[in-house]
Image (tube, rainbow, N blue to C red; front, side, top):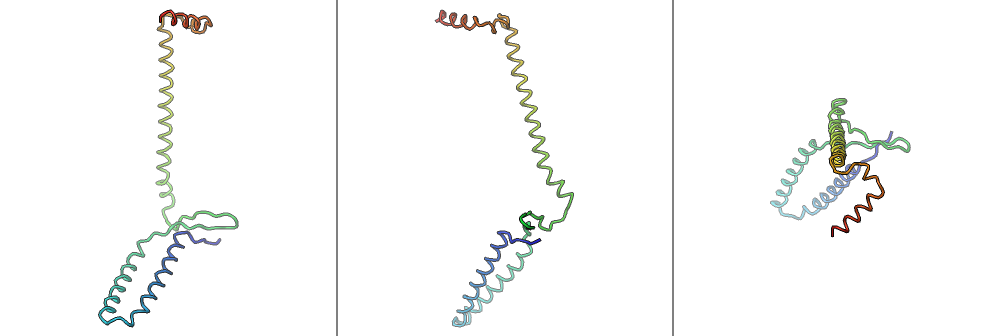
Length: 149
């Protein structure tokens, strides 16, 4: 299996090359500077190197991309944890599924309540339910609406 550099690794390598070029240019001109200025520059470089060494261990490794033939896969980046990390990472998925089930139950209850309301209105009305299916009932409604104006 071949490992492929991730974009963050490429960016880090590019930044390192740029830093080396800038450092070499700055170092080239220090021979003409007065002693006190060159000493201040040397002290500043030592501080920068000390800070750089401190910040390097704080970086986390990114997951690696491994390729085999025509297939690429995302590796885990060497992190341990195994089944415990898998269990913890499944909690958001379980919360999503529980939320979707709750929404589905709430919508079913709302639809049932709407149908029950319509049924109750039909049964409590003065007209029998068969009147609503009668084709002449629509004509009756139109004529009674026009007479009521």
